[in-house]
Length: 434
Length: 159
Image (cartoon, rainbow over all chains, first blue to last red; front, side, top):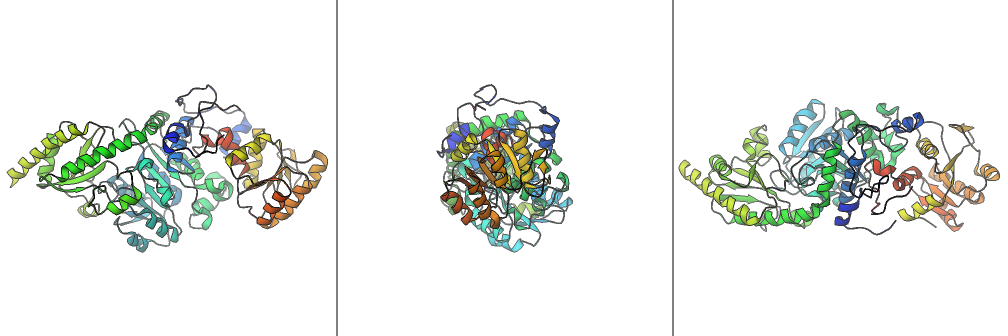
C-alpha cells in the first residue's frame, strides 16, 4: 500500500470503496440484506461479544453502510463514522453516547428548529437538560457550563440564521471543561469545512442534504476524531463497566475506538435508527461528486446574494460570504471556499410580502428541505420554525419577513429571472398593505 | 527499527507467523483477552499466552515466560506486550533474549527505555497500537465497522 496522502477528490471516489473483494465489482455493491450468516457458533459468539469484526444484522452494521461511513470519515478527517436513519437520529445517537438522565448540554440558540425541539422537548423528557446560548458568544458558552455538562453542541453554519461558529474558541472552552465539542456540519459539508481540523471532537451530519445531494433519501451520520480523552473521567458511559455488554469497559478495551464502538454497538443497536443500505448506497454516489457540486452551489449562492443585495424590495441579506457580513471574518477563517449555499434574506413588507414572493415563484421549489441540487425556498416563521415560541424565534433569529433560500445548480440567470418575478409580486403586496 | 507507518505495520503482519502475548488474561472482559481471542479465531497468526499464573486460555497452552516459550517453540516473530509501562523494559530484555523479531507495545504501554532497548537490539518496534486493530485494518475487518482504515486503492484485495 502507498503512504501517499491522497487528496479530497481522490478520497471522495476511493476511500471506503475499494473493488469488491469477493467479486471484483468496481462500483459499490448494494447489500440489501437484513442479516448475515455466521461461520460457526464460535464465530457468532465472538461477533456478539465484539471480539471480532464482521456483520450480524443491518441495524448494527452492513457492508454498504460501512462503505459510506468510511468514506465520510475519511473526508472529515475522522477515525470512523456511524451512519443513521437521519440527521436527527445521528444527533440522538451522539448525545446518548455522551449523556444520560441528570446530565446537561450547552448548545447554540441558533440551531435548526428541529434540533431545538429535539433538545428542549424530547431530550429534556429523558432527563437531559440543555442551556441554549447565542451562537456568537463563546464566553456565554463558558458561563453556561456546569459540573454535569457532557457536551457543547453547535452548527458550523447556523440554520437558518447563517452565523458561523467560532470552532477553535468553542473547542478550547469545551476542552477546558473536560467535554467534547459536537458540531453539526450539514450546511458546510467536509468540502467547505472540516471541524475536526479546528478542534471538534464529534461531527454530525444530515446526509439528506448536500451529501446525498439530490433530495432523494434520508440519512445521517456521526464522525469522531479519535482524539478526545474519554478516560479522563466525565464520560462514565464510556469509562465504567457497561451493563449492556456484561461489564465491558469501552475505554479500556477499545482505546481510541471507545466512543465509536459504543455509539454503534450499544446506542444505535438499542435506538434502532439504522440507515437503509439503499440510502447509504445513494449517499456514496452523492459523496463521489461533492467536490464538483459544492463550488457550483457556492458560485450560484454568491450571485443570488449579490443580486438580492442590489434590490430595494430586500431589507437585508444574511449570507456570511458577503464582504460586509458580520460573520465575514469567521467565514474567511473556517469557510475559505465559501459559506455554503443556504442563507436568508428579509423582504420589505413583512409576512404578506414573504407570502406573495413565494407564491409567485416558478422555478424555486417551495418545500422544507435544503441542500438539493434544485433551488429551494421557504418561509421559516410559517413552516420549519412554527413550533418555536416567540421567544425561541427571536433567539433563533427568525423574523416574520425572513425567507430562506437553498441555492441549487440551475443556470444562475434562470434563478435570477424567477427571483425578479417574486420580488415584483412582493412589492405589489407591500404596496397594497401600505 | 521503530515502525511508524501503516505500510510498515502491514508488512510486519504479513511476514509474521507466531505471536507470544505477554500478560494475556483468561478474563473475558480484559482487553488482552479480546486480542487473544480475535487472533486465535481468525487463525492467521499462531498466538500463545505468556503468563505464569494460568495454564491455558481457550485450550491454548500458556508458557510461564518468554524463555520457556523460546526453549520449546523457538523465537517468536512478535512479542505482544500487555503490561504496565514500568514493566516494559524487563519484557523488552526478555524478548531480546528469546530472539524475538519484533516487539509490539499495546495501547498505553509506552516506555522510552523499553523502546530504545528493543530498537538497539535490532527488533522491529510498534508502540501504542493494537495488534487486533492493525490486523483488522488490513484484512477488511475495520472497514466493516465504518472505521477509517486509510486504505485507498483501486486494486482488488487478495486474502
